[in-house]
Structure formats: structure tokens, C-alpha cells
Image 1 (spheres, rainbow, N blue to C red):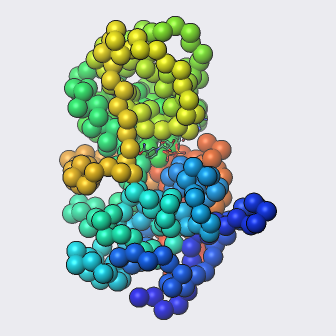
Image 2: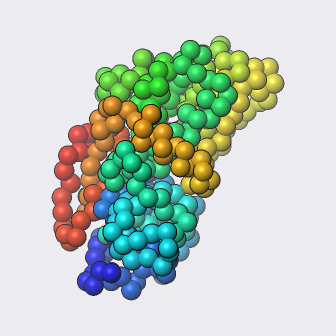
Image 3: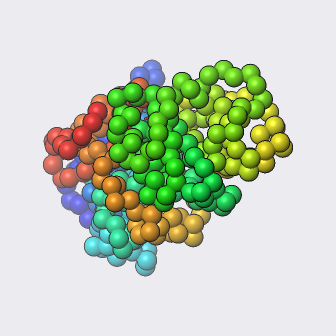
Length: 345
Ligand SMILES: NC(=O)c1ccc[n+]([C@@H]2O[C@H](COP(=O)([O-])OP(=O)(O)OC[C@H]3O[C@@H](n4cnc5c(N)ncnc54)[C@H](OP(=O)(O)O)[C@@H]3O)[C@@H](O)[C@H]2O)c1
């Protein structure tokens, strides 16, 4: 049990509705009651975290709030027989960092049912390099495979390809032998996307146009869509017969216009992806794949490293759509530390 105070990201709202975002020091007694106390060594930055850090009412229901939907570290206290002090553990999703305080903190209290032991084949840092984004990419690819979208089926499109989910989806799909087409709004990242395994890159605008036709020419055997909105409408129309679109994101909007034609004329499947409440058995299966047979040789190439004190600036960049890659947050006891190892902004 820590005796002194420690750092966390603290989101608060005044009586007049003004939001404040600070690096705050709190004592362990301030943490909510949960079964397992974890010393957090790594967390990550996801789009949902960026919304939480902005006080988005769809994510944060009460203030003050500590964001961080992912956390990895060491058990320092436990009321659960399943977890012992000294054990390496990690957690992604559930209500962490949303309805409950999360992992952007040196210490976090977590329900035992949400925790997984560190799997063989992964370091704590790698669990956060994947984090919610990696689990989401894995579930999306699994959804395509369940609909018999295999490497020989044809091109698989990844939208929002330079983001956390997108970059990991490109790496994983390429590693599994798929022909990956990456869609991005960042011309400067075309070479990086090819290095990560994309066979070709298409500009974001090519997919988001206002096409009135109910169907487009058949292009995609499968799609991992992190964008939603008009992009989701467009990729559904352009998916090949018996193809599958895994819908996992909404950076481009939550609403979209659709007809039933892709479903009834081409047998297209729209698969919904929810990583937060992924059932335990499926979650364990995905993490085992991510640790072993699906683990990309070039995993570290999409990694960007940051620290708690640099994180709020990164939040703003993420919401502006300017970040690339998958951001890991290294958390130490130091009240002040500086970002290092970030290859790209
Ligand atoms: N369903 C789930 O369980 C689950 C889990 C994790 C994340 N998500 C969702 O997946 C999405 C991506 O999350 P993330 O953490 O990967 O976020 P991220 O790292 O910010 O990536 C989002 C990417 O989308 C593209 N983009 C940004 N703004 C856009 C816009 N206005 N229109 C079109 N494209 C835009 C950008 O890529 P390019 O510049 O390369 O186009 C950006 O890098 C979010 O909506 C998130 O909520 C869902």
C-alpha cells in the first residue's frame, strides 16, 4: 500500500460548468473502493480517453474524474484470492476510465473480474501498446474471419489507418497475409503505412464522398472501419459479395445513411465491435493470439511513448486528428517527468 501521495490526471468541473484538467496529487485513501490495488506502470491514449479528458458527457458521468481505459502494472494489495501482491496484471475497457476512475494514475483500484494476469509472450508495456486498440483490431479481424474473409478473398480496407486501432489493424492484417488497403487523411504518412504492411494507400476523401447510388462497384472483401459516419455508408456500398465490414469507430461521425441493398443484394455482413465488454473467454483468446501467433514482428514501429505530464497536450492533438500511431503512457513515481521516444507527433 503506498503511503505518500501520487500523481494522476484529474478532470474536474466547477459549479459554473468550467472544465479543469490538471496533474493532481492524491493519497491512496482518495481512490474508490475496489478489490485490487494496482501500481500502474503503463497506460495508453485512446480516442475514448481523449473524450473523457474533455469531460464528454457520453463518457464521464461524474466529476472529479481520472481517465485511462487501459492500465498495466503490479498488484500491491488484493481482497481477491485470484490476485496476489507482486503479480503483473493488466486491464482494458469495462467501465475503467469512464464510469469509474482509470489508469492515468500511479495507482488504481480495479474490480478483480476485470483484471487479467500478464500473458506469457507479452511485456507489461506491450499489453498497453496493444491495449483497447489492439483488442479492438483483433476482434475486428476475428469478425472478418468468422465470415470467411481470408487472405485470398481480396483487398481488406482499414479506415483511419494511422490511428491507434487503424495502425494495429494494418500491422496485424498484413502479418496474417491479407492485402491491406489503408485509408488516411495524412499524405505524409503514406510511406509509413506501406512500411507497416499496406499494399496500397487511398486518400480519406475517396471514401467519404456524398455518393447517392445505393451500391458502388465491388472493391473490399473486408473492412475494418474506425471512422463511421459517411465513410461507413460508403464502404458498405463498396463491399464485395459476402464480404464483411467490422464497424468499431466513430471519429467521422455516429450517424450514417443506409439502404438494405448491400445486405440483401450482396450478402454483406455488418459486424459490430465492442471491446469494452468483450466476454472473458473471447478476450483471453484474443490476448493469446496477440501474444503469440498474431504478434507482428514490427509491433514496436507503431509505438509512441509519452508520460502523464505530457498527456494533456497529446489529448488535444488526438481530438484534432493530428496524432499517428499507438500511444503508450509510461507512469513512474516522479512527480515531474518528460516525454521521450515519441517518433512522430
Ligand atoms: N468499438 C470499440 O470497442 C472501440 C475500441 C477502441 C476504439 N474505438 C473507436 O475507434 C475509433 C478510433 O479510435 P483510436 O483510439 O484509434 O483513435 P485515434 O488514434 O485518434 O485514430 C483515429 C484516426 O481516424 C482518422 N480520423 C480522425 N479524425 C477523422 C475525421 N474527422 N474523419 C475521418 N477520419 C478521421 C485519423 O486517421 P487518418 O488520418 O489516418 O485518416 C485518426 O488517426 C474511435 O472512434 C474510437 O472511439 C472503438
